[in-house]
Amino acid sequence: MPLAADSYIYTGPWINWSHGLVLGSTITLSQRNGGLLTAFLGIFVTAAGASCWRILSYALHQLRAKEAWQDGLHHQQQVVLRNNSSSAGAAWQMVQLIWYWRQLSVRSILRTLPFIALALCNMTLFAVAGVFSSEVTKAAGNETLVRSLNCGYLLFDSTLPATSQVLNAAINGMDANVTLAASTYSRACYQDMPNPLQCSEFTQPHIPWKTKVDAPCPFKSELCFDGPMSAYEMDTGLIDSHEMLGINAPERNRVQYRKVTTCSPLHTKGYVHEVNETNPDHVTYGETTLEFAFGGIEGISNYTYGYKLSGGSGSYGYVLT
Image 1: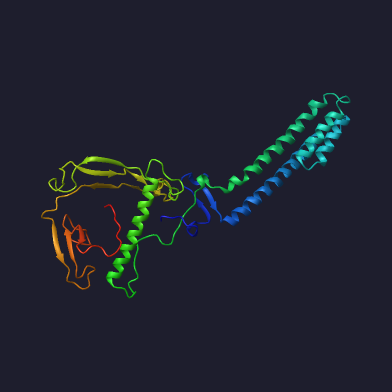
Image 2 (image 1 turned 180 degrees about the horizontal axis):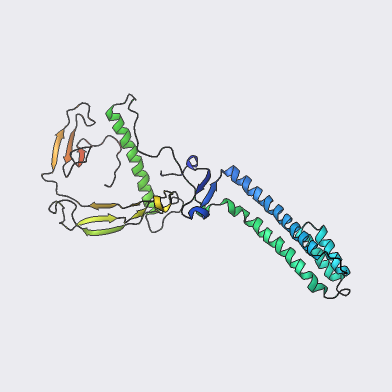
């Protein structure tokens, strides 16, 4: 599917197998629900920070509550731990205790600094967590799962009152649109300086391939116009269905695909036949066609390529086979 339209983006839990079962566990939300989740996380982190300090201060208060005699600094520290619900407030009151007891108690600074450090540490950790809580709503690499109900082969409704010529024109028009889109994409993304705005719709902006300018002739050696070792070959090597094509799947379900295309101009003498179509049900009825017989296409025709001498009356695409 060339474009990841919003209507095709899957919302809900899924696994990004690029990161494995655990780290790849992802939930995709709509823009509205994502905003609500971000707001909730901010409130939740703030409440969690306050609750964490309440638990810590209560635990410290209980551990230090003893029947033995203690000085006034100890008891005032207990009061701060008992009555302050925020770590920032507790840290500030502990600083004030140091000042008030600097000449009245032994080692007032050393006895109070651990509480200040603990309160500031709690405040800092949850402040940082609040700032980065929005990162939870971002999938790794900002990736989404795209699903479409329109994947597969294109089949026309045979019940429609359309002639074979009309259906053929529709297929040719679709092929032409795909060809124009591919041509535009290749100019934007298969250059030294790809356009990031146009090249981010697929998992990989382009598929690498290797070329060979002296490849063997793919037909009989005497057919290639420039000799038996003059063909131009393009080879993608093994393409991983997950990493390159973006088909999300665990390793055991992935496949590797290789595309090799060889091009060469050919001698046509003795391999081109002129055909006048007389069948009224054929898409080329009444026209003269040149049939290039370098090998038939199984299930489609007994020739390789047909060219109408009258010229095309519509748009046509192309494909490398």
